[in-house]
Amino acid sequence: MISKLFKLLDHEKKVVKKEVCFALSQITAGNETHIGCVIANPNYLNKLITLAISDKFSEVTFFFLEPK
Image (cartoon, rainbow, N blue to C red; front, side):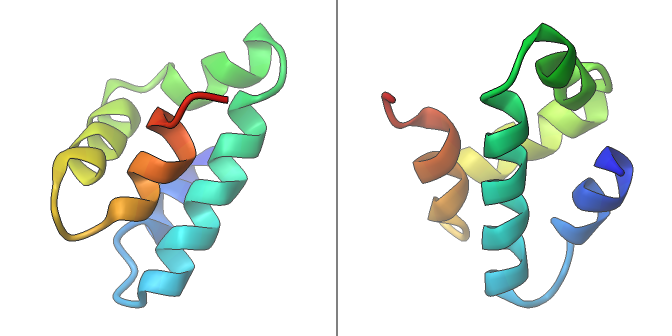
């Protein structure tokens, strides 16, 4: 399931990317196992970091880098 979510981060519609980021943020709000599923693949983490630092997609920054 995580791999399918990450594939959707390449979707052309911004709203799809936003919803994927929200889903991933909810998963990473869980326990260590849940977090590990998201960050276990270096390509996934690189994708999130790339989106977070780009000007194209500020929702990643909102969901993952804002203090809780």
